[in-house]
Image (cartoon, rainbow, N blue to C red; front, side, top):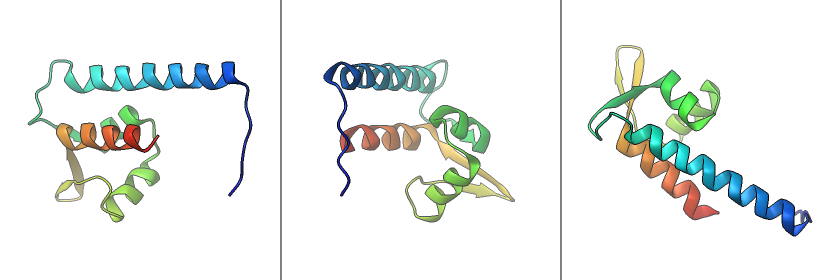
Length: 91
């Protein structure tokens, strides 16, 4: 295990930035949408700020549930919110 030491002020700034990010994600998830709506790959990648390859890995290992119609994948907003909450709880 590698240990990284940072200044307290830097750590607090990181925590604040992460909290701000979480609030923005929650706002985007609830803005004009209900929990029964679906998001496509691009929307999920943009929302989570991840690459398409990372999203593919999340699908492959079952981290994020999805539905597929033809060659297109769709994700329920409630599942993405749960993923975000799980990531927060790991911190």
